[in-house]
Length: 166
Length: 188
Image 1: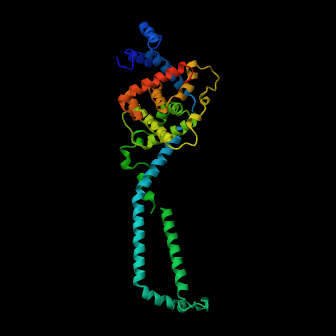
Image 2 (image 1 turned 90 degrees about the vertical axis):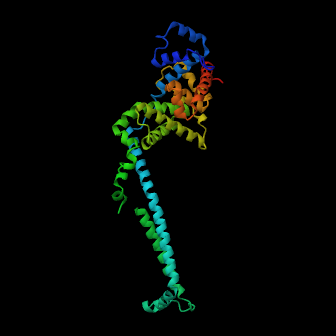
Image 3 (image 1 turned 60 degrees about the vertical axis):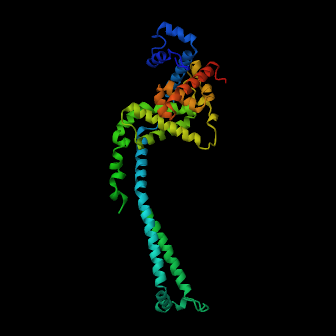
């Protein structure tokens, strides 16, 4: 006999589980239960919880199985997409970084040529009329800065749209 | 080029990498519907009685089935699948209790379990609510799994993650306390 349970508890549990308790149980076991605290606890708690189980199981308004099935399929699909997207996102970041590095390198390398080209740009496009007459000598910055800002803005928009599309 | 053209099987939920372990490979929609019909009420009752919050039981029941379908689970029959489902539900309950609460589950009124049909309940059943409220959540879990669901100590250990050897002692103490509370009308 275990220090915590009665020797007849297993027999009693089996009878309760089969629904044989108390009508189809031996008389000596019924007499034992009235005098054994462990067994009477077992009967009381089991009867109460099984009655509660029958009662409680009638209460819920369950969601249709099809809705849960569909939700699970959706979650599996999203998980699969996320799993596949993770390395591609890394590749995107790497490619973007490399592109920026190359652009910066070319910009530094060709800075002298671009300065000349930008210096000639107002004359080529006849933009002199747009530049204020009070502009200082290095007024070429008035042209370069908006152009670079526009390129940066458009690059951001293009990257954003490309990411959204994917 | 779109994702659908690159990974059509993944989007259709038929990826080769998932086929071996996913429940979808073992259980189709109709099989799941039958399994759900047989097990959902028991699972809800377990969650509702242990958490003492029917609303939470609604949410966790749905989440447990979704995770059950998304995860790999034992393939050796409905008994194992059902046990796995209870394990997921137990973990969800544990996660819920670990999160900071805006209100305590102890504040949920027990009358949410009252029988709306007006039928008279047995005295012990009427006493169950107050008695359960006096028990610790883990004790409620153990008692429900053992005496309402009829799981063995080994199965309870698998579901709760507790050591199998400690189940007997924990269950004995919980049962003794529950019986005392039931006899005293839920008074500690």
